[in-house]
Amino acid sequence: MLQSIRDNLKGTLAFIIIGIIIVPLALFGVDSLFSDSGLGQNAAQVNGDDISERDLNRAIYLQKQQMIARFGQNLPADFISDESLRQPVLNNLIERELLSQGAANLSMAISSSKLDQIILASSQFQTDGNFDGDKFVAVLRNMGYTPATYKVLLERDLINNQLQLGLSASDFPLANELDANAALSLQSRSFTFTTLSKAKVLANTAITAEEVTAFYSDNKSQFVQPEQVAIEYIDLTPDTLMAKVDVSEAEIDAQYQKNLVEFEASIERRAAHILLELKEDGSEQAQLQVLQAELAAGAVFADLAKTYSEDVGSSESGGDLGFSSGDTFPEAFEVALAELELDQISAAIETDAGIHIIKLLEIRGADAPSLAEQTPKISLNLKRAKAEAKFSELLESLAEQTYNAENLTEVGADLDLAVAKTELFDRTGGKGITANSKILAAVFSDDVLSDGNSSDLIELSDQRVVVVKLIQQVDSHIKAQSVVSTQIESQLKSAKAEQQLQAQGAGIVAALAAGGNLQELAVAAGLSVEDAKSVLRSDTTIDIEIAQQAFVLPKPKGSDEISGFSTSNGDFVVLSLSKVDAGVFSSLNESEQQNLADQLTLKTAASDYQAFRDELKQLAEIEIR
Image 1: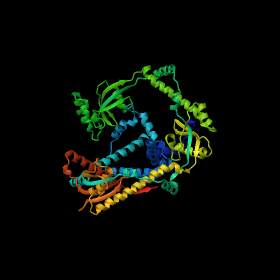
Image 2: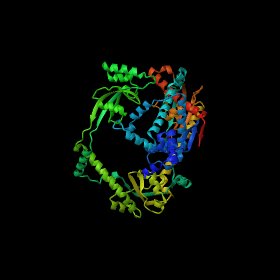
Image 3: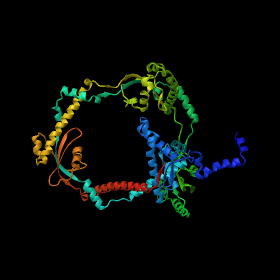
Image 4: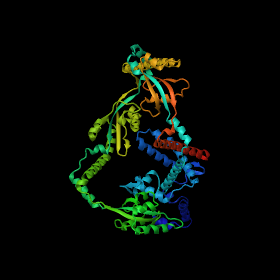
C-alpha cells in the first residue's frame, strides 16, 4: 500500500501534500506535527499576543489534576468542572503573559544551558537520583507537553520569577518607615478587666418543661431530620484480594531464576565537570588554556570548578553532576566519560552547552542479588500479579451477579468477597466510603434509591470498584420533642445565661462611664479584676480575644476607654484601657532591628510587586474571546 502511494505521488498532488507538511514545519516547528495545536481559536489576546484554546485547556487540565491530588477524589464535580475553572485559569494565563511581556521589555533572559541544567536536576524526571530520558518524555506527555514546548514554558516561568526577585531585591525600608512600623508593631497597652463567667451563671439557670415545649412548638423547622439511608456494599481492590493469595517457594524460585537470566549488570559513573560557555569573541579558548595549565600544575579539580565553571548548578559542589548510566548527558560527554579511568581528567569536550573538562569521580556496578534478598520482593510481586488477575476476573462476575441480586450478602458469599454495611447517613454524606461523592451520587440515584436495584460498578480508581445496595431508608421527618428536649433545654439555658451576663455587664459599663471605679464595682459584684501592664500584640499570657479588644480601642484622651463585649465561649468582659505606649525602633538589639527591617522589606516588596502587576494589567489591551 505504501509503495502504491509512493508510485502515484507525482505532479500537482505531490506539491500540494508537500506544501501541507512544509507550512506547519516552517511556521511552528516539528512539534506541530505531533501536537493538537493546529490553528484553532484563541481564548484571549494580550497586547496582540494570543493565548490559545489549546493552552487554556491544558492549563485547566493541570489545575484539575493538582486539585484532585491535593484534595482527593471527593471534590464535587461542579467544583472542578471545565466551566468553573475556565475563568480563573484564563485570568492566571493572562497575568503570566503580562509578566512575560514585562520581563521581555526589561531584556530579561535565561541561557539554554541553564534550562538544560535545571531539567537534568529536576527530581520529577529522575530515577534513582539520575536523569531518566524516558521518564522525562512520559511526564511531559501526561501533562500535554513536548520537550520543546515544556522548555518554552519553563523559560517563561523562570524569567517571571527572575522579574519578581529583581523587583523585590530593589526594595529597602527608610529610617522613618522603620520608626513608624516599630511604633505600631511594638506598641504596648495597659488596661484592667473583669470577666463575668457564663459557666457560673449556667449552674444557677433553670429552664421549665413549659419553656421547652413552647420553644419546640414555635421552632419545629429547626428539628427536621433529612432523609437518611443505610447501605451494604462490596469494595473490590487487588489489595483486599492479596490476603487470600498464596505463593509457593517453587514459584518464587522460578521467578528468581527468570530474573537472573534477564539481569544485566549496570555500571554507573559519577562525573564532575568544569563548564566554559562559548563566547562570540572566542575568549573561552584563552580561559581554557589557563584552566588546563593549572590542572597540569596539580591544582585541585573541585577548587577550579568553583573558580572557573559557569555551571551555577554544580560549581559550588566542585562540579559534581552525580551518577549517569550512560544516557544522562550529551553523547560526546558520555563517550568521554566512559573512556576515563577513576580520577582521570578528560581533554576539552565541546557540546551545545559549551566546553567541558570532565573528571570521573566514582564507578559503581550492580551485582545480582541473592534469592534470600529477593524473596520478599518476588513474593509480593507475585501475590500482586495474582491479585490483579483475580481482580480483573471478578469485575465481570461482580457486575453480572449484582445486577438483579436481592442482596449483596449472597453475592459476597458466592464470590468470597466481604460485604460491609453502613450506619444511616443523609445526602450530605457520612463517614468513610459514604463521604465519597461518587458513592453518594449512586446511592441517591433513582435506580438505587427509588427502584431498589444494586448500583452499577462504581469506579473510584483504576484498581478500586464498589457496588452498593440500599438496606434501609428513613423519610425526612420532624424529630419528636422527647428526642430533642435535652438539646432545647441546653440551648435555652445558654441564651438565658448570656442575656443575664450582658445585662449585668452593661450595668458595670454604664457605671464606669459615669465615673465609677472598676475595682470597686467588681468587688461589689463578687468579681475579681486583672491588671495588664504594657501588653504587646504578641503577648500570650493574656486571653487572645481580650488582648485583641484592647488593641481595637482608640488611645485614651483624658479618661480611660471602656469596652464591654462577649467572648466566643459566652463570657462577658468589661475592659478599661488606660495607656498606650508607642514602640521604639532604637530600643531593639541589632538582630531584632534586622528582623523587623526584613519583615518590612518583604511586606513592601509584595506590595510593590502587586502594584507592578496591576499597572501592567491597567495599561494592557486585553481581549477575551
